[in-house]
Image (cartoon, rainbow, N blue to C red; front, side, top):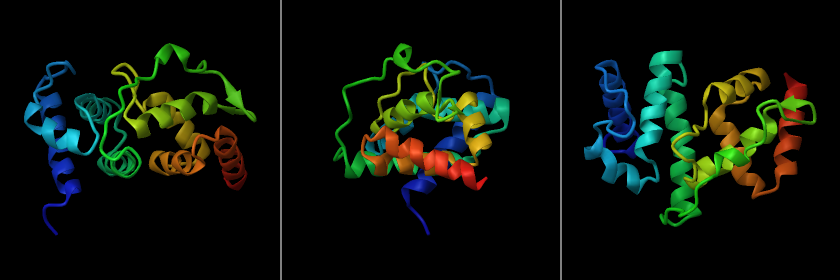
Length: 174
């Protein structure tokens, strides 16, 4: 199977990993400008690529499969909900709940919900990554895949209580 967008995204991710290994460590000057038209077409930006390559090399996660699944959720939202029109809004990271905030006893949940919404909408600022180390701790602890969480957030259609209930119910299974 050739010419699927996932194949192109794999090529971009591999290039980004190689560039980071070669010493390209500045997200603003990260040399993937040739990929920007494609990334724009699927609702992804340069910092998404940089952050995931950096964390993969520095932390060993998220892996390529996770990167692809997360960005498939973003692309689908961008195409189906936003009708390929980028949002003009950006999340103000200072408005995120504190890192130690909890909902129903689940730490980080109040913080990750707005991050997930912003990821789906393409509204994350450069300084905020969906699936950062803190997010990954939340996912590991609660045995939730990041793309699964994005799907739950999308289906909840803005109802945070539905998301919280889903996570609470999920945590009872683990």
